[in-house]
Image (cartoon, rainbow, N blue to C red):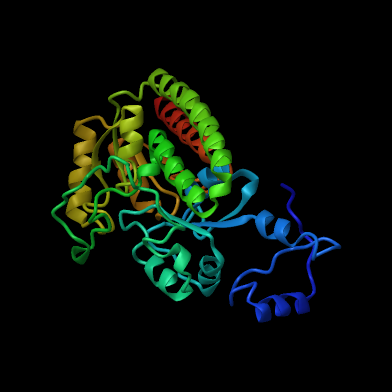
Length: 332
């Protein structure tokens, strides 16, 4: 069905409000030259607005929604998704949204609840038809940790970085598909077809990534990471995470921890230290240098680097960065 992009005069919207055709706050549809003849078509054809918390979710949502929706992300891929400035412009996006998608497991608890409350959009409140928790159905790792948020731990409900296993991308996509079908039931078959195509393409790429990881020698490779962003990625590609620069997620390391970590990396011959681009690289770079390991700044999200343009190229970029880091370390 065609999308119409011509603006209509404000008086048409005023009349619609007066007659009760539009509810207060509803978006005014776009008409072509004959608004009376095409009013039903215009209402049906207006694209949905899907708002996601991260660019990873936005990339997957675009795969499923196709031309039936405009997709916008609140956070950028180069930002730490735990800590995003809740600007008024983000609230405005949520207020207009038909579907809202969050990572879940309290990843965004520091900034999303206030935005949802302030937006006053009943469609996308938790429990509403337009609310999607992308973690539903995902096998969450690191649940039952002893430390809580009051102690500085930002993963009290288990590890929320689940999109970094591409197999979980299929679960996330299914959650988004179902959410889209709830708010636009007439397009259910369209969303199901696009999901099936995404499922096929992602499974093909997953097989290729696993072969690439095996060829690089990643199976059983010991690594240290700065933040606990990578257990899903490690599980997907066979890495062994033996320790972290942060003793607990979100808790800065003490000097004694850094000393012990460096000695552990030396004694266990850990060749790689992974850090996200939004953390200061000075400390992990010093640890890697003292331990004789390679440091790799790995994009954890779509949009974190120019190479990570979508969900597929995110994993391409990650494996390429690891390959380059390990090759540099092994060079004479």
